[in-house]
Length: 215
Image (cartoon, rainbow, N blue to C red):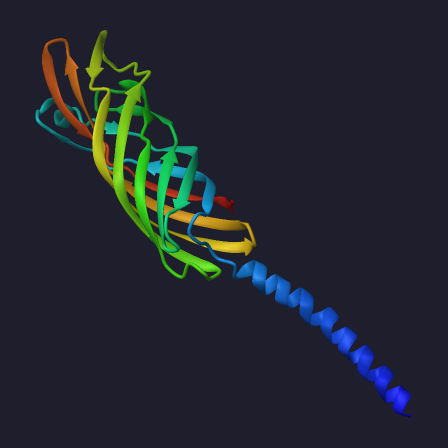
């Protein structure tokens, strides 16, 4: 009888260990979080929604100049300098068509590398919201803007602030899902021959979803 109880106890312990160990490992994988020295790499699909205003002249306003939306991939890299503080570099480029009451004015490419200082809440948890603030440098290139038969010249760079809020949801030890929203301020000045047309403020809201890995 004692042998039977011993055998049952051993089997129970083995079954318990077999059941609990994977659960503990899974929980450990899920709750590993992020720490100082970690590198986070995210790949997102972003929707860029310009919020266009004009200043410094009446021409752009008079022709109702606007900039269309765009959806493109975005890559970003975050280095955690503290458990809850990271520095993120965002890389993406997009092409936008410029519209007006006179018709289409052509297209322009926008390259806005952005550097953000982030604070990550709940850095050891599975769900990790974060906020960020920083600076973007926007380079406009490959533009083919025109009014009638005349080309429109634009300023090819601008500096502006950027704000960010998002959340990482860890689904495995080194893999997480991401949702992110940013507000970026950018602008360009336009001239037609010797005539200043004014300043076009694009100032997009950027909404993104994607995946990330921790290294």
